[in-house]
Image 1 (tube, rainbow, N blue to C red):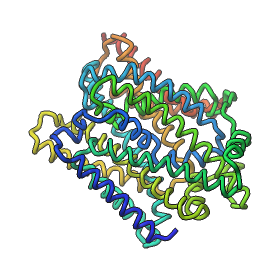
Image 2: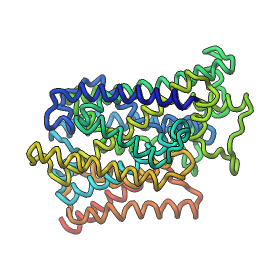
Image 3: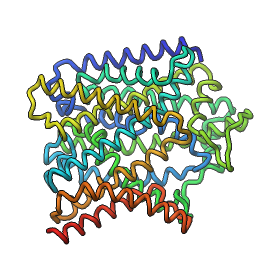
Image 4: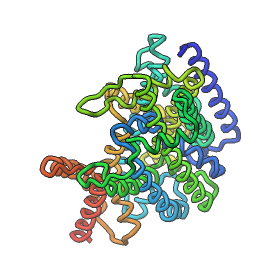
Length: 484
């Protein structure tokens, strides 16, 4: 695809984001960056959250992973839906009752200051790695499609992307992002639909034949009943519930958008609508995956295989979209991946800034001028952190989405344990012991998973988050018994 055309698309797209930023920054208050003034239309928030949840990882990883993992990812999605219902009717009422800006303030109310700081710190670590890995994937594609043509080094490309994000988020933060994410979700979903249409035409299929080609394909296997497999139904379904609760309900990034809604009822409507749209979109991307492999098979496109498995599967969709599907599909793909890169990173950096300034700098007690100064320093600081993590993982291969969920199991596990323990018990614990518990339990979970694989060929898979949370809860009970 012509790099000059891509440059024009990127300039036009970024100009649109700046225009949205300008209008949303009008009449902003000192808290607009953090709360959106709690005036966001819930329908807008719901649709925009889909783009943030999907990101560039879903955009290219889910279609690519179909060859190695079939449709087993749907088992995880089914679990997600149950998790979203829990968030809707258990967590959101708590957040609105306490009028939280940083959701980790709940831990201070329930347990104490050290538990509060520990919970926030685990979010900061989790979100930093998650946001960086999501942005890494999108940055690699933009590097291949555009920056390489102008001999721009990868590290400079990442700096440019982060600088652009800073430009349209630094004034109004979450107030702007609620609107920009809606635009970005639209382009992301549009790219998938255009790609499916392009493959359908290339294979000379009708709409009904396309559906049949997907549902009768050898990759269209939804349920895995092999208990030793990491993709086993029960492991995927249960971990889907827990990871949804942890990565959405206990995630400042996603909940900060929800808490911009006017009241609890609208926030609940937002989350239920979001979960429905997200599930349909994820199924769409899985279907796209089969279409991509059908295309590669028919036109003799050789894909990398090692030990009987496809490797570097994240490169499949970008390669076909940019080199085989024609100009319209290429343009929609560039818009989609650009939207994915911005939507995943802008809200993450805003959430990281909010959490750190509220949880560690007590920014709510500062005057407006000092609040703005601290916000800008922290916003810049997390941009640097994201950059460093991206460069550290810049040579990684494979599907990034599996890596993200595995890392989440270790970093969100203690958070999940703390919240479940806090919500469903009235037990008081020794606050000072919590930091040690939250550090040791992920290490123990990692060791147990290694042990099970070595001795029994049993992979916990995404279920490591359940083991981690249970170990955390058990440790909290022990602390209570010894020190209450």
